[in-house]
Length: 476
Image (cartoon, rainbow, N blue to C red):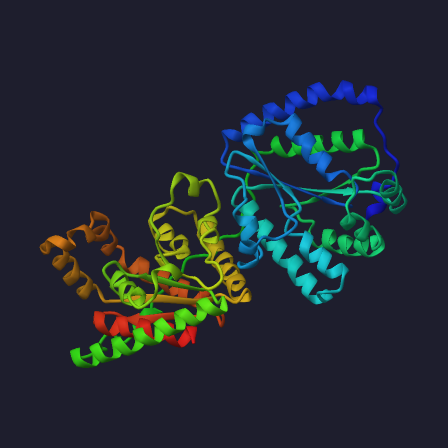
C-alpha cells in the first residue's frame, strides 16, 4: 500500500508560493460555508513519527480561521482518562457542528502501538478495527465529515531525519527501530478501516511543500462537500404489533404491606451503603438508569436509592430536552461526557433511550436516526461493561388507570402540582405507540452485559424495594 507514497514527488518553492494564496482563499471561503451548515469536520493526522505531523497541524492553523478550529493531541493518558472507557477522551473532544476538529493522534494510535509490541492478539486488533469502522460510520451518518491523513516516509528517509535533527524525542527513535513492524500493522489498520464514509488519504511526506499542499487540497475537497447528502443507513421498520408486548408480562398486582416494607427498606439501604463504600475503595464505578411511564415513581425510587449513600460518591442527572450545545453534537455525546470516574456512581432519571422512545414517538428523530440508534446504544453499553462499569437499567411499569389516578392526585395536591404538565396529558394519548417503542427497546437492547429490569410499579413501595434489591444484587 505505501509504495504509492514513495514516488519522490516534489514541489518547487516557486510553485508552492504561486499556489498558496488561491488555496488559502478557497479554504477560508469553504470554512465559512461550513459554519452555516449542520455538519462538522474531523481531521485525523497520523503516520510515520518523523513525517511532520506537527508541522501539518501548524500549517492548517495558519491557513484556516482559528476561530472555527480546535486541535487535540492524544498521547499520554491522564488519570481521569484511564478511569473511563478509552473512547471517552475522543467523544468529549469532538467538534461541534459548523466547526473543524484536528485530532493529532486518534483512536488508531493505541491499537496500532499495542499490536506492534504484541500486547494484543491479531484477533483483538481486528475487533478493534471493526469498532473503529462502526464508530466512524456512526459519526458520518450523523453528519460528520471525516478526513483521515496518513503521512508516509520511506524507511531510509526516516532514519536519515533521525540522524540529522535533534528535535525528535526518544519515542520517535524507539518506534523507528520497529519501522517494518509499524508499517505492517498500519497497513492492516488502513486496509480494514478504509471506508466510503471515512476513506484514508496516504500522503508522501518526504517533500514538505508537496506534503502541505496535498493536505490542504484534501481538506478543501472535504470542506466543499458540506452540501452533499449525509450517508444514511437503511431504516429499521417500526414494530407492527398485533399481540402483547413485553410489558404485558409484568405482573402489576404485586404489593407489599407496611411492616414488611419498612423492615426490608432499612435492610436493603444498609446493604447498599456498604456496597457503595466498597466500590469507592476499590475504584469500581456504576451507572444506574431509570426509564418508565410518566408518574411511574422514578423520582421516589431514586430518592430511596441515594438516601443511604454518601453524597460525595454519587451524582443524579435528570435528562431533559437537549441544550443548544448538546444539539450541536451526536446525541450520545452528552452521555459519554458524564461517565463517572472510578469509584463513583451516576444515576440517570431518563437516559440515552430518549432517542428510541420520546424522539421516535414524537417525531423528533427521523426513522433512519432512531432505527440505527439500537446498535449505537448497544455498542455504548458494551464499552461501559468492557471497562468494568456496572450498568443497571430499569423500566418502571404501571397501567393507564394507575397513571390517571396519579395524575389527578398531582393536580389536587399543591406540593405535587409541579410534577404534572400538559405534555404528560398529551403523552397519555400515545400510550400504545410508546408501548410498541418500549417493546422494541427491550427486545433489541437487553443483553448479557446490560439486561433490562422491568419493575411492576402500580404499588410504589413494592417498586422501590425491587429497585433496591436489584441494585444490591447487581453491584454485589
